[in-house]
Image 1: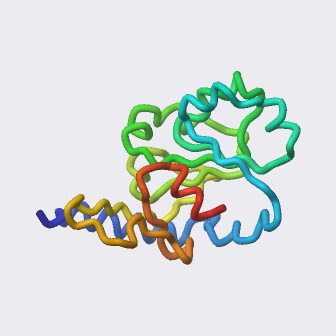
Image 2 (image 1 turned 45 degrees about the vertical axis):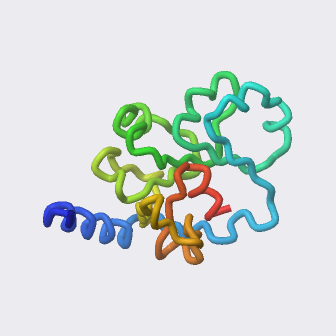
Image 3 (image 1 turned 135 degrees about the vertical axis):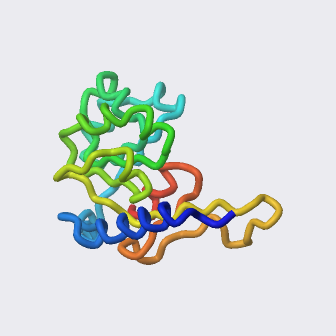
Length: 165
């Protein structure tokens, strides 16, 4: 089924918005070159993490999706925050909008209709492409070579953050 004209117009407006946004993903190129980073997801392994060790490490921290629900246990906010999950963005849009204290938030332009814009958001051109299982290309999931052009999904927020690490 072909996308509706309204959806195509919305996607074009999102791409234009990315192009004129205050911050660009390219502003972060090499910003942390040589530094180590933790990408913090939301799975049960977070229950086994020594948060004092993470905090003391000085590593750059990148949290995804619902990581803010763990901040009390962690004892610190992450440096960067990103959401890939559309259902989470829709369900927790108000919490995500209020969430502050990070250097930047990275959201795909497909979330623009769910999350209000703010000074700390970097809108990225994320290509939402999930091939049918019977037709999955050998090189899927795709990996971005130029983040300022397009970022590909791989099924998790952590996968998208690996593009930028």
